[in-house]
Image (tube, rainbow, N blue to C red; front, top):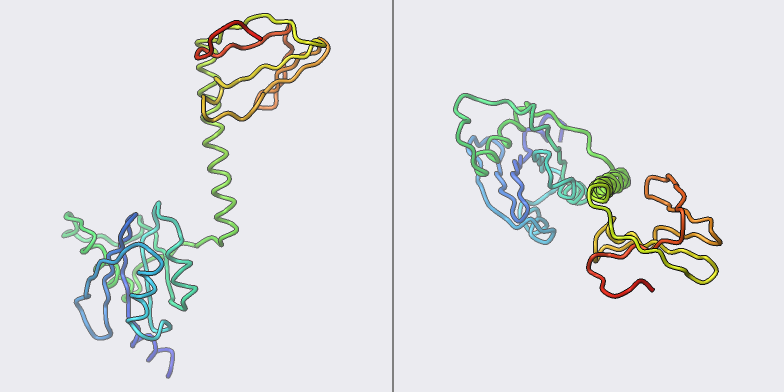
Length: 222
């Protein structure tokens, strides 16, 4: 079978994804109206649906890039289905597209995909996406720390001077992260050379042996 004949006999799947479900519009060769079906956004449900359509090499799937990520793309391609993630801002819009539903969006994607009018985006590899996730987590943690530091400047904790054996100092900055999210002692000093090691890598000296008393703690400093 030639490539033209293979393309003409392809089954196009327009998908509208959400957290729990996927609306699939199946556009068979020679048909103009797709058949729609809602399936669970789970691997087992996707595999059952694809298996019902026969040869995966004849399937052409597409869905819009969004917060759901690329798990569906990786799953479909691993099954032998040609899949594209399309750029939302480059999808052609008509004058009758004022009312949007997941069913209408899926049908429209299936027709536009068969007509070759959708622009795909580059899908990262699993390793690249893992690095992106790490960067996003780091940025989120850094933002939380900056907020806590600002809160600390506006409402500093109660500090009590204490004498610890050998002049050692432990300053627990639980108020920097919050109770239940403790990362351990943030400052360690010894023999009068006390230093606070902040998350941003800066250091500053403490004048004496200080112990930070958290507001929810009671009793004298140990």
